[in-house]
Image (cartoon, rainbow, N blue to C red; front, side, top):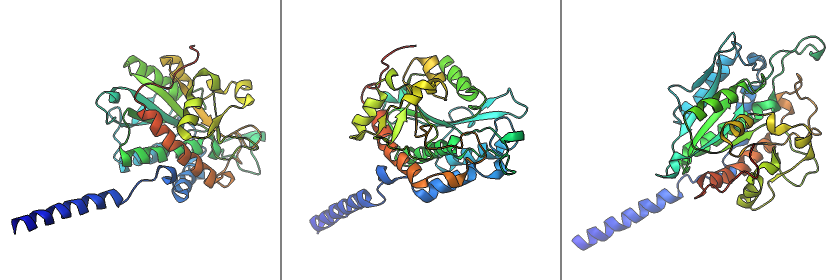
Length: 323
C-alpha cells in the first residue's frame, strides 16, 4: 500500500511539473501583440497630450501613464520614485526609470539600459500649422520607440530572464537637446554604474524602402553591436545607411550621452531612412500614419536578440573606436 501511495505521489508530481512547462509559455518572437502596440501608441499620440512637449503641464499625464506600465508589471523604480526630475523648465520634466535586477549573482552587477524618448515638440505656430492642426503628435518621433520599450519592459518583467540588471528609461527633453539623457548619464556616471551597453529605439513607425535589413543602427562602425545582433538573430537584422553618417545621427539621439560619459557601446536603431516618411516634426506625424504590424514586428525581432545580448557570459559587444 505504501509503495502504491509513493508511486501515485511521484506520478502526481511529474504530472504537475509537466503541466507547468506547458501552461502559458512565452514566445519571444510573438510576445508583442498588435492590439497592445496600437493601444499604447494611440494614447501617446492623443491630441489631449498637446504634442508631448517637455516641461509642460500635459506631460504629467504622459509620465503617469508610463509609470503605470512599470507598476502594472511589478517593475520597481531605480531611484526612490520612477521620476528622475529635470528642473530647468516651468513645469518639471521627468525621465521615467524602471529597474529589473539581474538573476545572475555576478552579472547582475553589470547594467544594460534600454530606452526611448517620449517627448516631442508640442504645438506649432504660423506657417508650420497644417490645415488648422497645430499639434505635433509625434507618432513616429517617438511614440513608436516609446511603445517598443514598453513592450520590452513587459517581456522581461514576465520572464525575469535577464542575467544582467536592466534600466528601462523613457527619456524626456530629447527634443530640447538630449537634456534628459544627458542628465541621467551624468548622474549614473557619478554613481560609478558598471554599464555594459545602452540600446535606444528611435522612429521605428514605418518600414524602410528597398533595404535588405529591418533596421539600421547609428554609429554603425563605432562598435560590433550590429555584427553581434545579426549573429544572435541568425539573419541580417541590422545594417548601415549612408544617411546616418551624413546627418550625424549617432550624436542626435539619447544614446550619445551614455557613449560620451561611459565610453561604452551606446547606439540607436531606427527605420526612418529619410525617404519613407515625409512628416518629420509636422502635425501629420499622426497615429494613422503608423504601420502597426511593422512596429510589432520590430519589437518581436529585437526582443530575443536583446535577451541574448543581455545574457552573454562576457561583454561581447565592444567599441571599435573610443571617443
